[in-house]
Length: 117
Length: 114
Picture 1 (cartoon, helix red, strand yellow):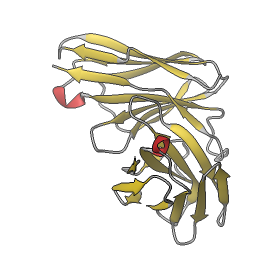
Picture 2 (cartoon, rainbow over the protein chains, first blue to last red; picture 1 turned 180 degrees about the horizontal axis):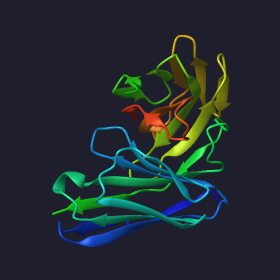
Picture 3 (cartoon, rainbow over the protein chains, first blue to last red; picture 1 turned 135 degrees about the vertical axis):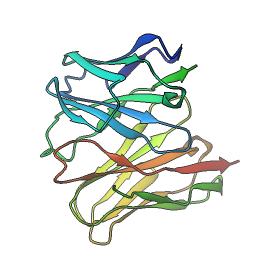
């Protein structure tokens, strides 16, 4: 099973709402990632979790709050978002979360389309 | 800020023809170069992970080469088929960043015309 599952596929939320994006993998991977992709731009790294600990936060605003409850799950909590945060949010995972294992394949989910109104 | 460039941005190819496109990346602190195939409404699919200068990898009709000294990788598709239509993304991983995060190019959008 080489699958990363993301829910919901589509989310519309108001600027005062609190919502969450969820990501799940059962490949035994110990690194999980959130990427953000705006139209006609490349995916941009937001967060990296390695062995359930946040290892990278690429200067993401605090209105995005990641959480890794266990090695299979990764959440992205959303609060007080702005319309410019509307984008495709991609979750990904890889076998090992250290910088020494450069040959790891990274597996992506299909993404969650977020619209902030 | 890392610069990963892909060219061309889009490409129309007749079915049966072969094609190739380029990914350029910083030649210093190289760690790995990934190629992905991304069809609309699907997840990006990993094609190759390349780590050594001179690497050549092949998967069916698709192959890739890597030159880390000059900072480029080529992706080749032989005998294009309609199902090859997709966006092809390359992504660069550098050493010293301490992370497994990838920096992506904007992709090459490939359309195969029957």
